[in-house]
Length: 173
Image (cartoon, rainbow, N blue to C red; front, side, top):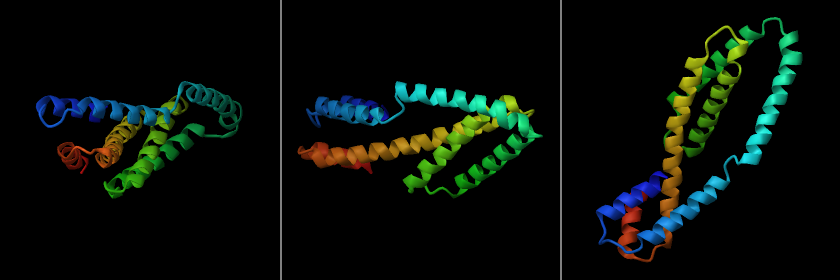
């Protein structure tokens, strides 16, 4: 979405550089839809929600009734995960996409755990959830930039117009 908006602004500001903006926009739209199809669709989301409901039932029926101090355990576990995430954030290399992706997944897990288990503890986990959400958002922007850079590089390889190719190459770096 950001890349498509950027291309629209660039096309408006530089109308004489190329007549291929419509083709570029269509091509980027196709690539975007292809990537979006890989994400969690409605069927997968429903299955995921049903799995969470079953997990909730199992936790309520077994773990919560057999563990003597479940709220304390949850607090301790989430605090540990928060410290681990904070440490990862100080060590993450912005050029290592896989590390960024893995750290973002850990932030997402912490965020949802804090949200999901908030009612089972005496501690307010809003701060943990917001912190994890902020990290997830920041790393998501870096992930988007990585994907856009790859798309632009792929696009540059497929452009025959020398001026357009140079412009796309400059922005993919």
